[in-house]
Length: 190
Image (tube, rainbow, N blue to C red; front, side):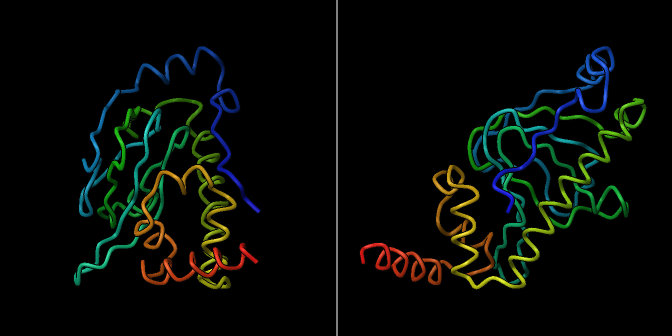
């Protein structure tokens, strides 16, 4: 069971000189809460490293229902793989939930570096691991099991995210999450 995301270590794929060159491409960006890094429909040709703060990737349906694809926090690195691989616009927005400090890298710059293939392979491996875990949980786990898994794997995140957003991440309604929390609270009192 995955209890945290494996951090990316530049030392795994590059020498110190190359890491210094890599950092020269970084652009610092700060986001206030509710500010969007990118919107659905944009073409985000960048890789993002979260230095501080918390963001969410969200999908909003035509009827206004919102689903959270992923949360990103300190140490995470992410990019829009769908856009990168297909060239199609982003299908989700990325929004700050807390004040954020980010490092932004343009993918066109990174592709010039000899370490890019190794870095990209590592990013893909981390993303695949996260997606496989979440997909299996969504397909086979009850709403209660999904919530318990979330609490077990990401206790610090659970304390930083409002319940309605946890529900949107787990694919359940806030009312269902409230019922699950009451049920679990009652079980723990026994």
